[in-house]
Length: 117
Image 1 (tube, one colour):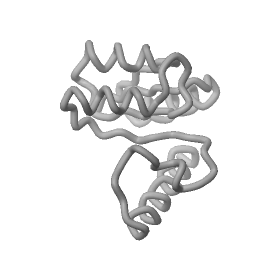
Image 2 (tube, helix red, strand yellow):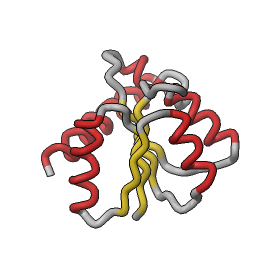
Image 3 (cartoon, helix red, strand yellow):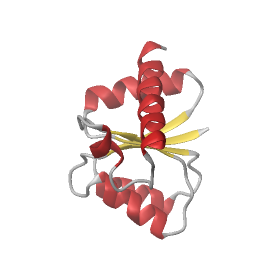
Image 4 (cartoon, rainbow, N blue to C red):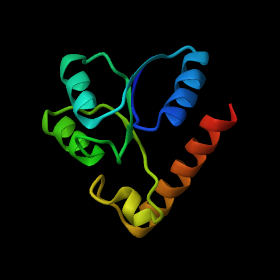
């Protein structure tokens, strides 16, 4: 599996890199939205994008909009420091209240698993 991590926080990125590489994944890292967009334009071999919304130079949602605008269905795991569930998923998916709670639970679980491993 090949993963692109688009994360500005180097400490968080290092933890993800170590964990994912230790699990056998091939992992690339970029620290800005423009770098993420360029990497996604030039490489179609990624199996997953881990995307921070608070990237410099181009917001993570803009990276996602450009990716989807090119017709890509690449799975995206979004990382954000936003406090509310509404802020976390705003603009990324259409959802009902029930779906919103499911997304929140999955995000919390994935975050927990990544840092426990």
